[in-house]
Amino acid sequence: MPNITFILPDESIKVVDAIEGDSIMQTAVDNDIEEITADCGGSCSCATCHCIIDDAWIGKVGTADEVEMSIMESAIEATPNSRLSCQIKVTDDLDGIVVHVPESEW
Image 1 (cartoon, helix red, strand yellow):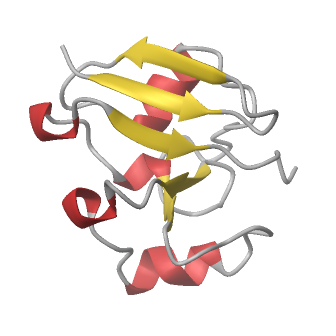
Image 2 (tube, one colour):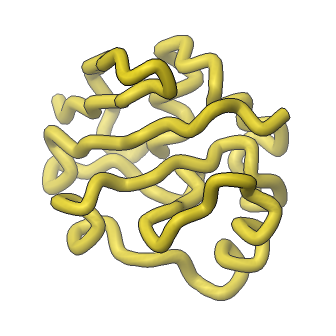
Image 3 (spheres, rainbow, N blue to C red):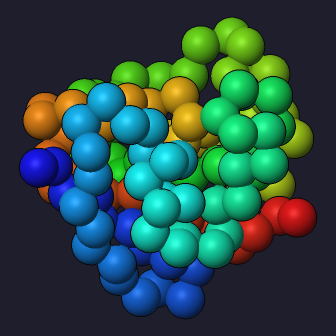
């Protein structure tokens, strides 16, 4: 089972088990990462699941497509490594991924 390391806004670290095939967003919600509110339920229509992928992992995850980038324009702390966590599926290749969670924007 892959695991995800969430670095929370206060710099605390939460390592959680993830289910392969779930999104990083669903994993965050299932593990009470409160800053990821996922208001649209994973339909790529809001930015409430905004996360920042650690530099060491962005190559495996890839960058956002045009639709995701247009949604990201509403994210307050967007960076080049910003992604919507609803758009990243958990795979064994992502075991150990580090995800930075910005302050809740909502």
